[in-house]
Image (cartoon, rainbow, N blue to C red; front, side, top):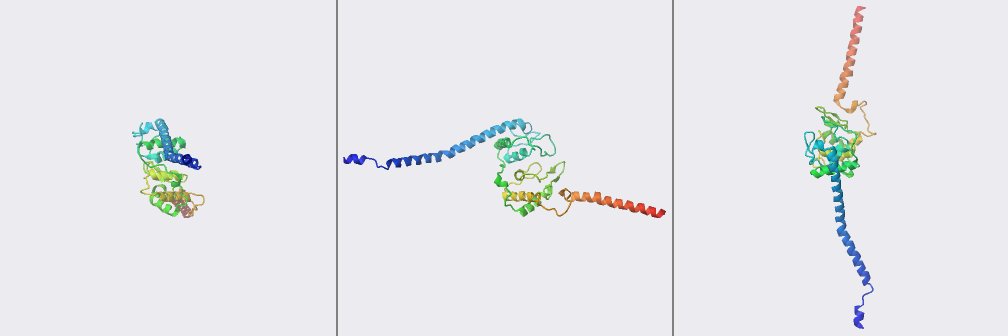
Length: 269
């Protein structure tokens, strides 16, 4: 009888076994769930690249080559990164309608989802600047004064001190930045599209880019005052000098003609 009683299970044994089973199940889930999520992300990325390759073959390969290697009609896209693709395509600059000194902004051809797929495919050809997230280009809490100083030192030579753009050489120009979204301003600084130099994070950190975006929003916002009166497009001394020559010199000529005419009449009388 003693041996039989010794072999009896403790009343809590079943509970302990159940808890151990649950713990083991949780451990297995914790071990395998991240791998499953990573595999799902990898699959989604592969699908995006595949769809982007199809879009590229139809809309881009004729100029940039079947593998993005470039041609006489378009530069190589190997290593440009997803940020450059997002900027060019989501502003309508690409696909280009025709060759020229500079590709202008125009209505967008692809949806944002298609743009992301194109960007994924181009990024797969070689490492390059990555499309920024909303946190990176959000100007909330940025230093507007510092942004103004940075903009005047690095950008105003082409874009004008308020970002209203200006003419460059050989038919090129710096576009107006008044209605450009923070994301596209950030991407332009990151990638240096067309005639613009690039400002990677190693040259201009993320915080400084935010400061510049905040400055542009401030000077082009509805509450920004212009104490100078008629700003003549904000183009600086060129437009102001032209205004002075046309109207100022014209007024002087008109006064001189009037004085000469009245002097001649006075002499006759």
